[in-house]
Amino acid sequence: MEFRQLGYFVAVAEERHFGRAARRLYVTGPSLSQQIQALERDLHVTLFERSPRSVVLTLAGEVLLQHAHVLLARAERARDEVRSVGPL
Image (tube, rainbow, N blue to C red; front, side, top):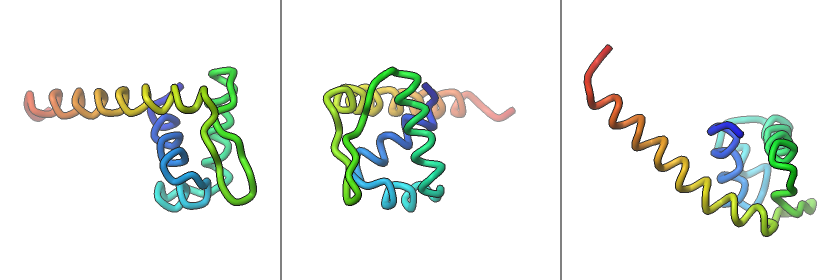
């Protein structure tokens, strides 16, 4: 599981649509879909119930979304703290 994949997952979960999430992230739809599928393979779960018009989080997806928000926020805080220490 990579932070980039978590960010992609959160975007799809919030947009409830792969196309809108891809536009939001400035990536292609197929690339986004592949990253979500890789995350699902890594976790051995299905994160979204997919239909042609929308996506809905599965129970596993709902659990991951809660953790993803915390993990991404902590990574952002860590980045900010490290940068505040000083320049290279």
